[in-house]
Image (cartoon, rainbow over all chains, first blue to last red; front, side, top):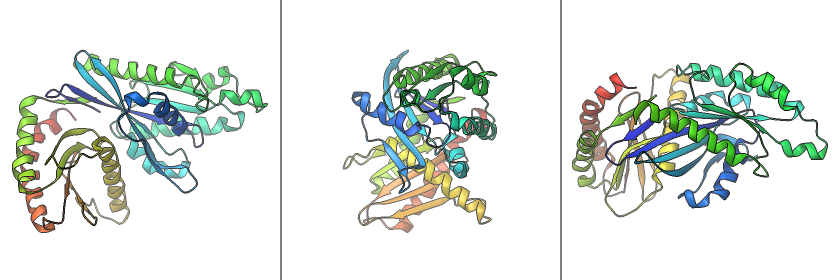
Length: 201
Length: 136
């Protein structure tokens, strides 16, 4: 639910990184925080457990400059991926304008990805939103692990499991090394801003 | 879905926040929606806070406490108060979509603050009601 402030010509947009636990959502934001430091005016906020897992969310505000004379402030959030934190995931999704689904490319995590996408659809439905109308992209993460001999799913399998029905843009990535992290972010920002532009500007 | 507020609406809201709260000694006040967006924020010029992070955490915190309320059989806790040594934060729900947050020092009593917040909330409800009905 983007907020358009006509007085200050400012639009606030909420983008949420969703996906299974230990899939690399926080790592995406940490990379963005380092790589685009000049666009970020405040500290990244993280609410973590002692074991360094996301407990509530991570938050990173990100300025992208002017679109049609409006300053756009992107608010990036992650959700906790662990199954048991469903209530907090649903809270963070409130008012979401765009989503990055970070899937774990390891073969071992195939079911976790499918379950997390199903959970996303359920949680969106509680806000009367769905993946057919909302701007979203997929990121197939941890592709760097292939070099270490870890069993990874082929992109075709990930596509078949997660994206067959939706045909959304997808990016094989390594959040740790930064591969395609910026490309994923650019795509979701452009899709989300375009959808708000159509509605308003 | 998105929603807008124009200059006239925002001026009216800011006028309420300034006369009822800032002019009565509140350090900082901000009106946010439950998604964590900042509708408007005012301060007395003494201190600058990282308001975007505060808004994100405040919306999350309020959501978490509302979920706790439901678990114990309450419909909601409509206000929250956090006490610090020098600074205190007070949260007051305006409607299902909006939240008013005030930061104040120990020079204002909680009772006085609650009265002023409650008066402001009544004004703000009137100003935000058309929005809640039509756009949200």
